Length: 165
Image (tube, rainbow, N blue to C red; front, side):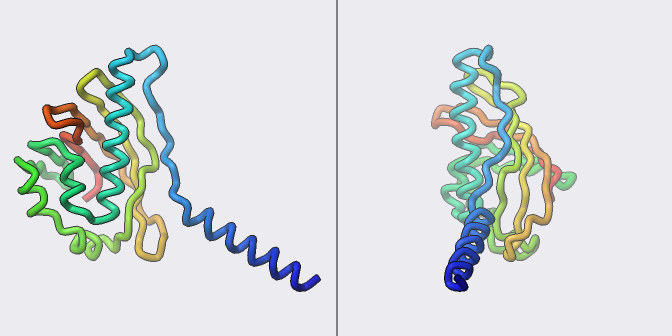
């Protein structure tokens, strides 16, 4: 009987660890079914960019991260407006290691993505994201606005306005 209890206990621990480690899906608030087909298609394409943005950010892959953005790219945060005129200037300015050290950051995750407005070529998202430290503890959450736009080269995040530093 003790062997069965030990096995059951280890299964429960394994299950608890796997549930904690499983990526959390954000709450999605999407366009209603009455929205135009074009707007809903734009929303779907823009959501793919949002997920790719977070994936490449967490992987600290600067070239792929820059590939999720539209240029010129604008970020409004910390009382400042920063404009990256092109992909290379964004790549040159990104230092994920310094960011991780400054904020005791391991990764981030979307907590909520809500479509505020959309048409065939642009989508506005109100988002909430959470930062997680190297110990796996979520330690801060920020609200932001993201504007995702279709350009001649595809979909990309044109602008972000965030309460995050």
